[in-house]
Image (cartoon, rainbow, N blue to C red; front, side, top):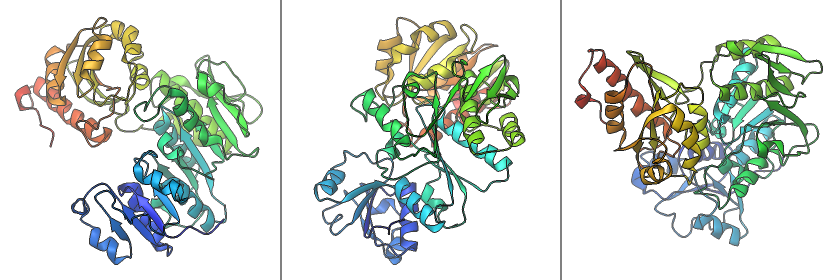
Length: 469
């Protein structure tokens, strides 16, 4: 493994940028930090300077790249940023946090880690966490890292070999160079982030980069029910999974069972009804996770136990309140049209009050029309995307513009009747009104619980619902 570049200029100083700076400084690498925010946004600025980091805020200003051997990007920084263009014009290598962290981890264990990378438009967080759960039940040392919330660089203080299970976004895949997972999983590719990518094809090509450094010794787990994933011909071993049971050489669903042929003979893994997480989309996630675990020789009992007991992740079709036959479901992670479509599948006719909207990612809201016409009684819109949603869906379903989460929840509470589900699945990013999808989901959950308590006569009236801090 080659020596780390120095100095490294880190652009973007949120969680990933700070974790990478910490890891590089600990290894004697000269670090520069640049961010658009002012110095006042970083109360720990003095501590970083004491450790030797040079800090460039408000831009960053000229001089940030002087003498830099590498520009490291945090995932939220687009490769179209002016500083990135300047770096490339100067011949400075541009890499992502995950690429540099992978190099460090491989160097300090002499390549003894096992790497699993999961990407895709939808389902990647749940699939990543489910794989990690299976490996933990098998007694493996596991680091659950990446886009799921904990930067890979955060795990570099421990130099012992581990199984790194990483969720990787398209943003992170833009800036890999040698990052090589032994098992790479592509859950699906549907339109998303078209506010960042010029075309769907460009977005799809970026997702497929997860396979580009693999060799014949590695494995590519692909969704054979998804047109983009099914068309991929990787250099590594191709292992399909299929909820429809189309290909039967990897994992698939058949006659109410999840089955696998990865280890040679076909075996029944678990009855579908025993899966801890419900919904057709979670059958797909489970099949992908089983494929990865089988490829890593995980014991059958560890796989089965994880499939039956995994509690799931917050903000992914999570029931957060219930009273009087009305369920309140937080799917704030449903940030694109396809994710919302999958969340709506399986509900009875005219039983859903859907909260939809936020910052538009240029998704095709009209694709929701057939399903909404059947399952939704009302759509309540919030955020910047409300006019676009109303234009695309107004002829198919009754829509009210709520504007913000407080009014949407209050109106849903007025409309809800026994048997209904109030579903937050926005099909949009959160950044117009919230810092992230987690904050949006937490706010919805607080409001939902207050509404359920008020309906039960245990809390305040609707007019007293919690306001967003």
